[in-house]
Image (tube, rainbow, N blue to C red; front, side, top):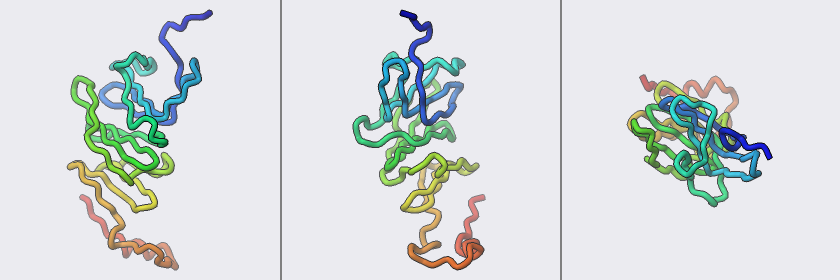
Amino acid sequence: AIQQKYGDIYRFKSSTVLNDRVYIGNLYNTTTGKLSPDRILKTEQGQYDIFPDDGFHHIDLATGDGDSIVHMETFNGKIFVWKHTVLYVIAVDNDGIESVDATHYHYGIADKHDVVLTKHGPAWFNEGGMYLHDMEGKIHNLITDRISRGHYIPDYSIINDWININLD
């Protein structure tokens, strides 16, 4: 049997970088065949391709809830983790210790392409609206009172008249 020097090999659906560490989420261990859709692994600082699963280098988010990690982004020293139905905001201190800062139900996404990182914070959309998480930790629904559900849009140029957002 061949013994691997650096541990198991993982496939993952999302990744992000914060404080000189790489975080990967929604994992498949190719060595054991184990799927971990709620787990995030992290590297040591400066070691961008070694993910030790030793009990200290992971974050588990609501395991067994039937939901899986869709996308991760970092902004303002925090990791934003979207599942299909929930958004988790994870604070990371200077020592690399993570803690769940906030859990926002009904703010999940269907696909990783539903999120964009702006200079104001991450913005995303789902069936409930279009959202922005600002630097103060507030979530703003950007289409409330601007676009009505079921309203027929004859020409998309009319949307510019409805949405008049000045975040600067």
